[in-house]
Structures are given as structure tokens and as C-alpha cells.
Image 1 (spheres, one colour):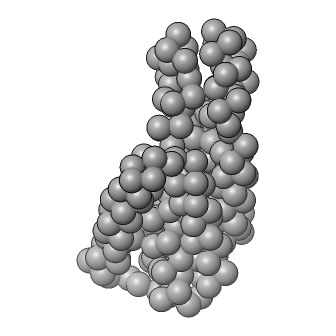
Image 2 (image 1 turned 90 degrees about the horizontal axis):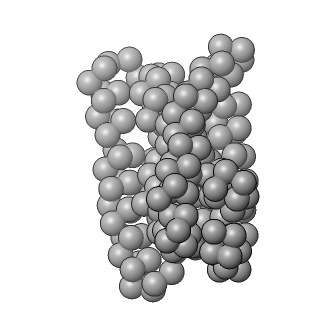
Length: 195
């Protein structure tokens, strides 16, 4: 299983998704505070908006994916949406309303990508490699829980701003979405044959 490139590719896609999710979860209140909000209650209420919107969006995208029986584009579009939101937030870091809108879009995309990802490996991995493959994919993705907040913190320490970190995470998410586009049913046949 460790020698199956397809599983590592799926792990990389999941890592890209989780990088955005962890960075948003960890840094959203700090980014909002840096936009000029100082009251903890206000920061909390503003921080809740992206998650509320993400919950609604997640339900709508999930329903659409089920009705159309299509998963790849329902994964890639939210990933690109998350990247776009991060870019908007970075570009308009001095305009609070637009930056919060960007963070909301990023949160909606990133959090919706999570449930849209898992049908992909479960559909593509054969029964003989599914359990171990899913565990390895999850392990690779969870490394983002350490690396992503650390990267954002390091970049913020070096530059005094989270702008470059948001651009970096957006780029990583875009790369992950492009890799997700390349995943195909032919890859599933290769995984099944290799098992």
C-alpha cells in the first residue's frame, strides 16, 4: 500500500484541503482582530458568520452532488472557491468588510471540500486496499494540522502579516484542486489491479 502512488496522490489532495481548513480554524479570530476589531465578543460574532454560511453551503453542495451523482466537480469547485476567498482576504487585508467576505468564501469552500473529498477515495479504492488506504490518506491529510498553522505563524512572524500565508495556502489549494481534476476512473482500475 505504501508503494501505491494513487493513495499518496489522494493523501496530497486531502492534505491541501486540510491545510486551508486548519489555517482558517486556527487563525480566523486573529485575522479578524488584525482587521481592526478589538472586542472579543465582536470578534466571536464575526468569526461565527463564515461557519454559519459554510454550514448552509455544505448542505446545498451535498444535495447537489447526490442529485447529480457527481463528486469530482463538487470537490474541485469548493476547493477553488476556498482559494479564491483566501486571495480576496489577502488582497483586501486593509478593507475589513471585503476581507471578511473573502474569509467567509474561503471557509465555505474549505469546509465543503471535506465531505466532498471522502466519496472520491471510497469509490476509487478497491475493497482489498480500502481500509489501509483510507487510513494512510487520512494520516497524510492530518499532517496539515501541524504544518498549516505552523506555516501561517512562521510567515506572520517573518513578515508581520498573514497576507503571504493566505496566498501560500491559496496556491496549495489550487494545486490540490488541479490534482483532484486529474484523478479518474482509470486510476481506480490501476489501484484495483495493483492490490
